[in-house]
Image (cartoon, rainbow, N blue to C red):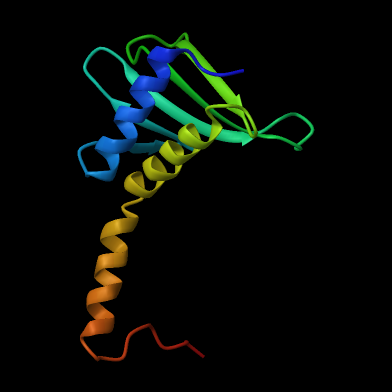
Length: 122
């Protein structure tokens, strides 16, 4: 089932803004979220109960309430919007885990010509 147009538009915009480094993603127990003053936008991934089909889900959560999500949608692998939402999930994960900065640091170490890596302890 495709997600509603308003979620698709937001996901497209978040993906582009994330690629430009304009979104601060935070990882919280396997969920990646953008925290805003009135609500959080969350994205997570998994497999169905039988472990056969992958899915990606997005939702809005009121951080001041413990009720959980205000609204959520998911797409399964093969659905119309899966590739878009999965790409956003991947970019959110990379940003939250600071992978671009870590790779830049490794790249700079490799360019330095110095030996890198810890020596195995005996």
